Image (cartoon, rainbow over the protein chains, first blue to last red):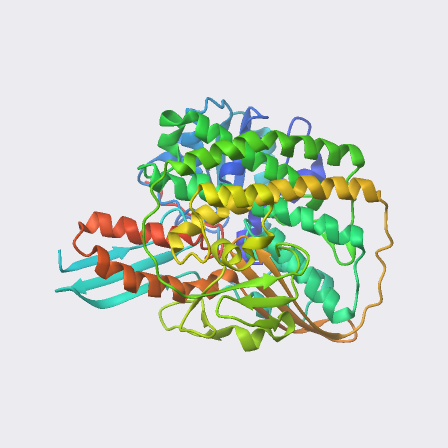
Length: 135
Length: 429
């Protein structure tokens, strides 16, 4: 409902539609405490989300745990504990799953249901990247 | 210290974005405000022009933590508009879902957002090393509450099986028996939570205000209660909520301010315990007593304790409710209804307080008007007035201590300021 903020969900929808072996796609949970419950079940978790990082709309970055917990980055805790804190907690509790973030640069996040064309056009590219990721 | 400038940008460990601004010079407060800096969400405008059955899904997106509350309140408002009377089974399952949502929110808030303050750490992360059992217990209790919401609502965040006039999926007897067993198993962990809270030093600060909460004849009101009760006396039918809760725009806040009989009011766990204490479960009453929560209580920091009391209440009531549901027998129900126009008003007690949804729907089922009053909106003015009274009493402390006391005060309310997006602001170097 906030334009490009929904890009992560659209990418997940596409992955769900493809039914890729060995990949479980989940929609609808907040990336804080609840992420730890998923981290117990899998080896790797990739969070796909909208990002504002000064890139061209549609460009993306794959962030590792070190990137996510780097002090230079600003993370706002939105729903519960922040993702960096969730990762640090995960490590302290000995949960082994690795967490990554695929951040996709937005063009706009005002009220609206439509995703910008620049992002829409690259959904197949994001999905291919995710499916072929070897990390 | 007689002069201090406190400027906390983006208070940590609250849901959403708020700033605390307090400037004191020579013992006199020159400036004090709680700035809510979230972008306006426009949900009331967003649902206009949409179909009636989209409203619960849209409004559940107001917040991930509170999405069960928004979904159910929205459903109730649509049902009220169309004269739909859900079955007893549906109501019982919704009550169970509400208990799960309340538990997961309170456990999240108390253990992961509030407790670090009381345990002298900046976040929950250091607790994993210093208090590993505490963190593991918290995770287990949160997981249990999530499982409850997943089972009944289809999903903890943005529940999908609770719909107008019923559920798209009814849990099985085996699933409910399994849940009941886990809830019984959670009692020692809840007792351990109480023991932990006995060791915490809750700041001693009192300011009397007006407390509001839903009132039900039959139970401690969460899912249902057709009257708004005030600690200053009186009952107001929920359908006349606009006469009881007055909203005003505040220039420094994107969240409106509310008041009723006094300059401010408080909703949430402490308000509910103050008003409906007699209807708490036996175990919850015992916990309240053990933790020193006697009513009336005017200490906003005790909202933390009230949430623990309610978490215990929800667990105990859920066990009894599951037995009742199983005894009644579960059945697939006809969810059909006639779409018609009307105005519907509904309220639920969600973790942070009373939530109101009001819709006007035309004969084709299209929403033509909407009004929502969120619990945290109702508390914002009260938080400011608490700060106004608190600051002079702690002005002799260091700036760091004053800042912490103010942050803890805001966190005690468990505000859900609500994010405009869960967009990640990332500076790549």
